[in-house]
Amino acid sequence: MTTHDLAPPRNLPEEALPITVREGLDFDLDGDIPRHWFGGDAFKTRFFDAMSVLFPEGERFFIACVRDYKDQVIDPAHKRAMLDFARQEAQHTKVHNAFNRRLAAQGIKVDKILANQRRNLFDIARQRLSKPHTLAMTAASEHLTALMAHGFFENRHHFANADPRVRAMFVWHAIEEVEHKGVAFDVMQQAAGVGYGLRVWALLAVSLQFPMFIFQILNHMLKVDGYSRRQRWGIWLKGLWWLYKPGGMMAPLLRPYLAWYRPGFHPWDSEAPGAFQTWMQAMGQHGNPVAASDTLHPPT
Ligand SMILES: [Fe+2]
Ligand SMILES: [Fe+2]
View 1 (tube, rainbow, N blue to C red):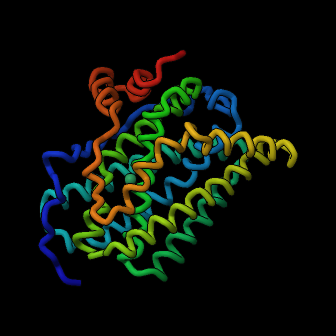
View 2 (view 1 turned 135 degrees about the vertical axis):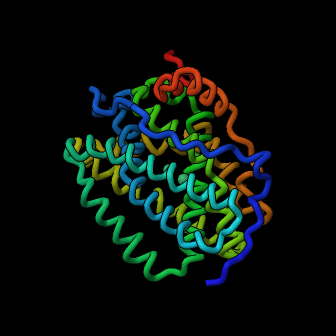
């Protein structure tokens, strides 16, 4: 492979956020977290639980696909950003693995789901698709994970009755996804030379795959919870309405999601959600991610 002199990512360092690797955070995930920690609601809880199950293998895949280009990137600032991106993702994997052990203890087939995902990502995608293609999938997935922050910050009222510890884990993850949201994108455009067509295709593909896997896992979890087929129908209808109704969970994500399809789109061009700085300040003050998240979600 040839080595390209990669220009520094656009708008760095003035507009991109610093990528801070926060190690050893304590979310008290071994505590007495209720099974249905999201206000006692099975669908809401299991929707986020399913996401947590998907994260560790997904993030290992993202790290590998970005690392494929480590020799092509020679700009020190961008090399540093790639390293910090990988270190943040490794922390996410560690924390979600801890959370997922709770799910396995509840009877969720976490190991089987992970084995399946490993096969899809590492034995199939990374073997059969080109490196630019898997990197485009990574950058597109990173677009989706960065949207999590919009979900958490613009839907704050939705999360008022979620368990503060689990909520804090997702909020911290969302914050860091915003911090590194342009890293894979820059490698994709500047080192891998991925054009508009593949970029669009990649987001279309992951936008179908990601919810499909989440919903499959969610349904398995509801079965493990002991709900009958009839009960599950009711839970699904109510849950999908909560997600997709006008003004629902997904509504604030639509605009930032669609921005990707603009030919001149770049992740660093959009501002971090407003509550981002509030979390940063609270985190600096308390040094505790649960307390920082609680400043965003005061009890009602
Ligand atoms: Fe992550
Ligand atoms: Fe990420």
